[in-house]
Amino acid sequence: MDVAMLAELPRTELVARWQVLYGVPPPKGISRRLMVGTLTYAHQAKQQGGPSAALSRRLARLIGGKPIAEVPATRTLKPGARLVREWNGKTHTVEVVEGGYIWNGTRYRSLSAVACAITGAHWSGPRFFGIGP
Image (cartoon, rainbow, N blue to C red; front, side, top):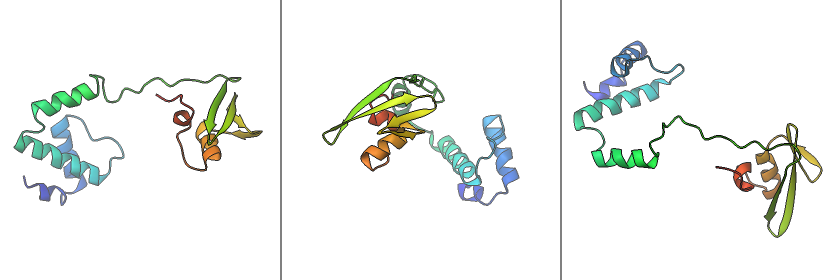
């Protein structure tokens, strides 16, 4: 099959081809564009042999043999904990409270909102305070 032809197929045909290729229907809500791209890649990999064995080993080593869907456990901060961070020569202390954080007497719903208030830029709150993965 010509991969350019995939983009012209109706969605029902794309779904049928996906099911034949992967043995399951495509994920609910998948866009037509993503379906076409995935089917195109699969077709090209079949024709050209896909990634080399060396690349496959390297990718496996990079993910550490863990399933890609595995999500690392998140740390939970308990109310009463204090986070301290120095920023631009000033020490900032954030208190963890039920359902949020308090910094400079103002309550915030997320640690990222606190980091943004301190720096004036969008930051990952856990990363800014050094508690991220």
